[in-house]
Amino acid sequence: MAVNLRTIKDIRNYLARELTQIYHEQEISSFTKIIIYSVLEVNKVNLLSGNEYPVTRQDAEKVIHICNELKTGKPLQYVIGETVFYDCIIKVNSSTLIPRPETEELVDLIIRENTGFIGKIIDIGTGSGCIAIALAVNFPDSEITGIDISEKALKTASENAKLNNVEITLLKADIFNHELYKMHDVDLIVSNPPYVRISEKQHMSINVLDFEPHTALFVPDNDPLVFYQAILDLAGYILNPGGKLYFEINEAMGNPLHQLLELSGYKGIKIVHDINGKERMIKARKDV
Image 1 (tube, one colour):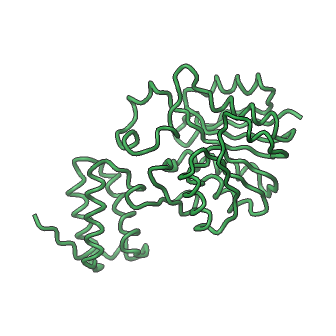
Image 2 (image 1 turned 180 degrees about the vertical axis):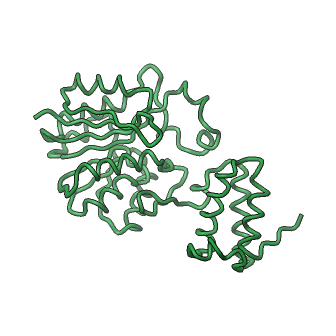
Image 3 (image 1 turned 45 degrees about the horizontal axis):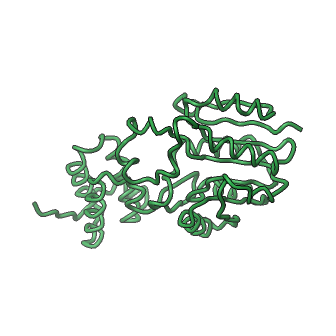
């Protein structure tokens, strides 16, 4: 059947018809808004009230291409190449995870609890740079470094920093060797490290398993806190007394991580629930 998309209304109907067997109605509605914003670059007034807003042939072809990509299960953020994270435009690709709402909550927690913060921040496993960039926007007088083992991810993070007009330092390094131990006087460490256990793969959606980088997601079942332990080992050398740690966590690993922080001598340890009531963040303070 020939596809004839001449107005926004046509786009809405087309996407609803083509995607209804794959996605929920709410997802399709969200996709439709993002696609219209991205392709047509219309404002909210036209999006909400302009069903007869005209669509060029070139834009119609873009919409059809995006729709065909979505049918494969490819995440929309990868299809259009970007997403919005804490009011920042963040480019994403197969080398970087798609920023999640719970990661935005982690950033929001840091910003709310550290009003007027000026200091040195390290973001370990920076990926797209979304955490480091959002913190740089909100703590403009701080020195922020994003660390990752992937050169491709760091290239994306660099592009995102320029896109959002912030300056951050980006460093290629492996958390499991001692090259980072030469850093010093760090005031805050934040990380969203790999934390999904291999056994949990079976509960994950296909679009995550097929398209997102597994090295940024998974840890062995017999050592699920391996990255947190490595970060704590590093923090023992580089984090200032009274310095703070903020982690995103696996909702099933809050208590073991709490115990690990206690054994490492941290104080003020608190597990924080996300908007859905899940244990998804933990914070602590290095003992003075």
